[in-house]
Amino acid sequence: MFSPKVEYTYNVSGESMKGNVISFLRVQTSNTSGTKKRLRRYPVGAQVEVFFNIEQPEQSYLINPRKHIWTTLGVVTGFVLIGYLMNSMIFRWLK
Image 1: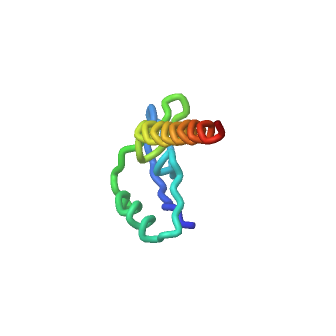
Image 2 (image 1 turned 120 degrees about the vertical axis):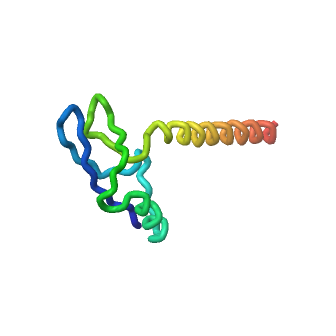
Image 3 (image 1 turned 90 degrees about the horizontal axis):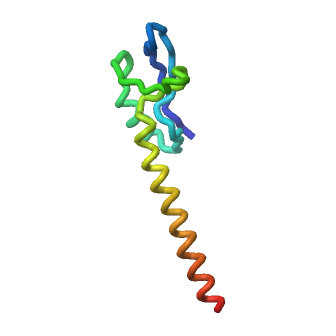
């Protein structure tokens, strides 16, 4: 499995910090081209926007974690809906 590796520095209240996480959702793939494509967004020496947890500034990401809240909520809602529908169908079938 391949996972993109990055390192970046950022400042919080004048303190220099280091990070290495692209996204809250960790992505691994068996496809090297997908990893290379993701890394192209972060060329060596480029200036990047860093998102960090105000309460724990050592937790940082290059992709805004709030973006993933909606994705996760959508996936969970989908699974709940599918489970509900399957459950309803099974009970109708058993009657």
